[in-house]
Length: 216
Ligand SMILES: [Zn+2]
Image (cartoon, rainbow, N blue to C red; front, top):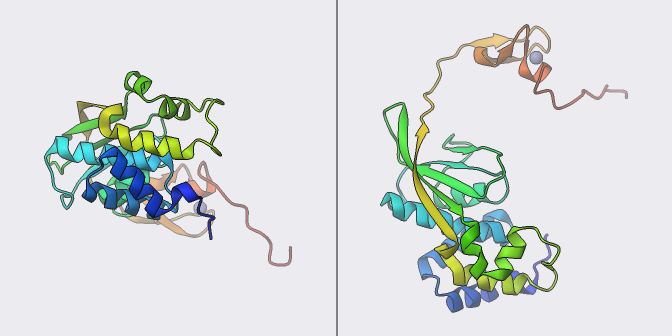
């Protein structure tokens, strides 16, 4: 069980959100995302505002089927999974690890591309929120033991005021036809498109484990 810090309890978060003028619907979504993430990381809080903003720009309700991309594996995927229902398992979430705090969202498209909205944390706008600014820059000036509460207050006061958006076009990935192939190396089956040369990727470039001998 993770230790809950006083500033991270739902009641304290709610008080901070009320002070910042966060709507009650978004407050509930922020609490849901925090619970899924196991704690209210600043990144998931900002992520919740990003998804909320992107949905509004698309003019869609929370139930609408959406496809999402996030540009960092940190925090943001969870806001997309909980609020936009783009999950790793339903294949509507793509994580591109390029180190930017940004997402794109789009509705389904039959074409080869889809018009999407991209929402990102805008460095220029952070200047009005000094605590968020030093936290975001990973500056040693940010003390996570003493400044978390202030950071939450600023994040909730800022809401989408630290975000910007743009219209972008993304490539739509079509479902690939595939057949099953047995890897001569490990004897397990994989889709044909995941064979590289004479073996499966698990025996090749994506190898991530060594077998431990039974009597080892
Ligand atoms: Zn193999």
